[in-house]
Amino acid sequence: MPSPTVDRAARYPLGAGIRLDALASDPYPALAELRRQEPVSWVPETGMWFVTRRDDVLTVLRDPETFTTDTPESTIRDIFGAHMMTTEGATQLRYKKKCMPPFQVRRLEEEALSGLEREVARLVNGFDSGGEAELCRVLARPIALHSVLSRLGLPLDQTARVNEWYEHFARALANFQGDPGLRAAGKAAAAQFRRALQPILDDLSRSPDRSLLSDLVCDHADPLTREEIESNALIILFGGIETTESMIANAIWALLAHPSEWGRIKDGRVRVDEAIEETLRWEPAVQSATRHATRRVTLRGAVIEDGEAVQCMLGAANRDPAHFSDPDRFDIRRPDAGDHLAFAIGRHFCLGASLARLETRVAIEALVDRLPGLHLDPDRETSPHGYEFRKPETLWVRW
Image (cartoon, rainbow, N blue to C red; front, side):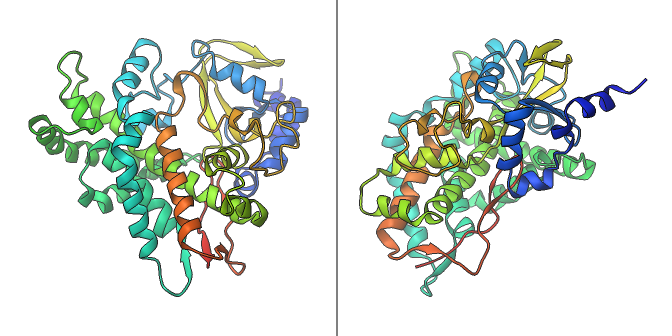
């Protein structure tokens, strides 16, 4: 009698042929084939189901009772604990409601914009006078670190330490081969963060400011526990660095890789905000959203067993021709670019979406204003890379 794995490999041959290293290089051709022929497919290399059509992705993400994030099997829960991305129902809504105010557009414009503009100007002014720079290192990562630390209420003199912790988090969460050493290092870094946070929370309880941690630690009506504050701060910290750095870098790369589109930004024919939505659709920083089945369920003929993991492939959904015309073409004038799922949808829609958009807009505007003749370095590879989290490994430019 063949094993279930063998049966699935025979039934889903395209999924059986998926290799993560190939997806990391260029995921879109393979995902397009899955979308056409095996829209819900078992991928043995991940031990998960891939869902690639936009309608099916929406079905999964809009049904947290059937497809949940609340499971001990979650790697992100193992590293960071129970927080707004690894809980459901009233608990998840409570966490998100508590953490949302500092990330609302009005408060960002009032409290974060001017400081962000000063920081970006400082970074760009500090570029090497030789007319070249690697923008991930000197712009995208520093912007992301500065913004998320400022919103959380963490001291900016802790930037280097936070960056070191982040590197351990990123390796642990991208550890699809299950290396126990990487997971242990990620958990150790999270424990260090929790210890370092205690005196900061004590200081904020005595001298509150308008930061998120201040809001949380000074909430006496319905307070979160210290552990809950720490866990939610951890996921906000990670997401505020990883996804924002990648979003900034991907947007700059996509525009510079299409000089005619960059030209439309420079001469004001297309607003930067519109261009950002198309880069989110065309090359999202986060390529998938993982959920776990709470019961045996059939999706487009595929039988998904209770407890099995489902990866909603956001990059595939964003290029679904059933919704987007000529979806592989990068077009910053696309009228429906904002229909992308780069920030997911529903209760787990990205908390920091507005902040990430603001950071990316300010970065692009500064490059347009301050670096005439900006273009990709033709002698260095700059294309995005990655299966789960996707961005250029380096982004060398000249001007």
